[in-house]
Length: 273
Image (cartoon, rainbow, N blue to C red; front, side, top):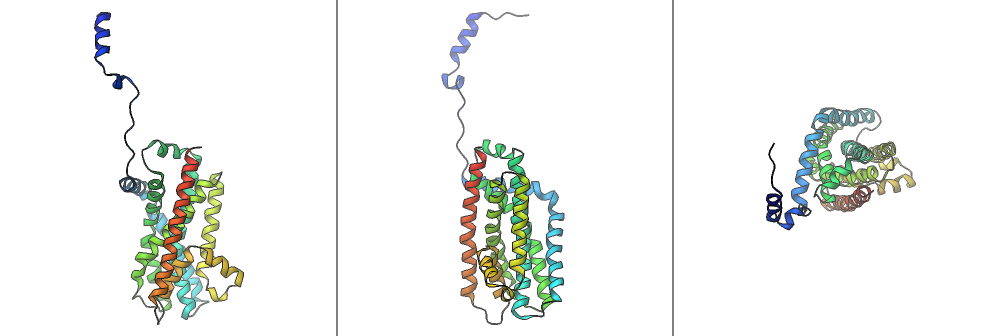
């Protein structure tokens, strides 16, 4: 056993800078886009295990609705609404329903505390999770749209519009889903809100608007996914007006920015509690 003289300990303590002996300084906060990419990759890797069941359930549900509606709707504008609504329903199932459940469980389990300790902007957490969940909707949405066009005899020419409909409708619905999950006091209530939102997207988006009462049409106009449905449905018509399509997509984009801003505020509010 060796004994170190006190003079040596005192001299070594003097050699340590005051800043090193004090509290360590925190590094600068990460910028939005690099942080968004990191959260997106992490969420995508985490949810990859559940990707196949996710795609199967969302796609099978929409294809089943198409087959069921085939016995009710023959063609024309009603068939266009049914196909477009069933395709966007895949986005609603994942972006609205599952994202509400995810953030509700994250809040209840204390998972938000983990993100709160990271030097990541709140917007990056919300946007990264929303983008990761919305990414799983792409194959199912395309499969549903192609199947619906073949089933009802609609043209496949302008299905490339899905490249704009999926991210814009997904952003609007993801923001609502995240806000429901973050603002709900219990995860069960978040699940209920997500289910109600998806049911609204099913009933108001898939059923032809011409057969709805006036009050229901007003509620349909308030649903963000309606404008994604309208934009896609317009591309099936013989007389295509791109101005109306771009207008519907612009509404989707505006609602998406607003809903994601609300979700970011809800994340800040939940993270500090």
